[in-house]
Image 1 (cartoon, rainbow, N blue to C red):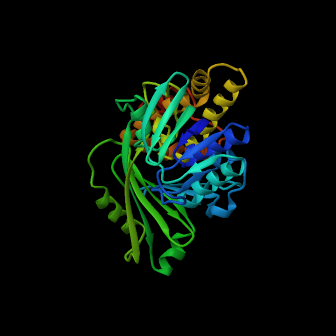
Image 2 (image 1 turned 45 degrees about the vertical axis):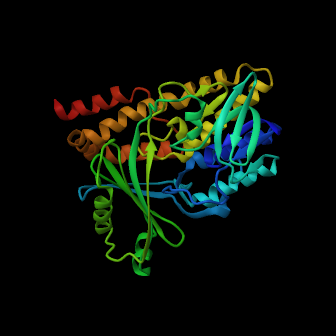
Image 3 (image 1 turned 60 degrees about the vertical axis):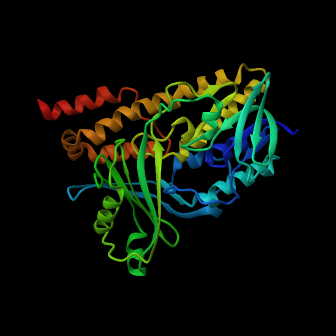
Length: 379
């Protein structure tokens, strides 16, 4: 039976970046992937710059488009934009992007097992037995990087899902050349294009990624609001479209991220940004933290699980906690929000661009500072 120091389940950004960092540091690592790479992955494909900075290699070969300017609309009333020297949002297709990171991990010695579906986990002494559709393997650590559904988390003992998952609907569409020429120059977010949420238009190399997401966990006719958003964009004809519905975990699990040397990362842990629902950057970040914890533990720096939790609690978890509060206020207190944005909207857009670039995180005193702004309009 083949043994690895670390088995990574899933070849998405969280899993592949974890494997890359581990392999680069001489730790025997296997990526267990249920499909054949490259494989399509439902995702808007807007990769913010702070995530790009966390990758130690060039990704230009898989970049579809880059946008230094981002436009934010609030109906027909308010419009803000930000522009930076570095690309705020890089457009990617996840099949090529995920495969690139996996191949980089492979260059440092990581093994990739494709068409291997994880079917069971057994915990015996210091080893974890991984049963797959094509055989059994053992590892000292397992990284659950298998997305929002995360079968690995369930197999490892997380029986109750404490994350908040919100509904989203994305379409990869082709439009007439005239419309594509017009829309391909702008990446945009339209707040309130869907109740308690937003719509997006992400231009790719030859098509558009258009979608809607609601920050409220409830039944909603996403397709209806997608059609209305096409009208907003002035699209009257769709040449071709592919629909993809999915759920995005926008709050961390409340019952821990490590059990029996199984580590949760990315969407499996619930690390997507609560305000924007962007998950790629935090997937990479959490994967890096998991790798760092295991590397330090191997050097005698402590228990890997404890180290991972300390790293999460240092920055990521406090940021997500603040983001959750801001998200609830932003999407549910629309009247007050609009009054605040009318005066401070451009500044807020610049602050969000800072977050996208990794120049700041959501402030820990956001609630206090925001309430001070609201008082300007109430009293």
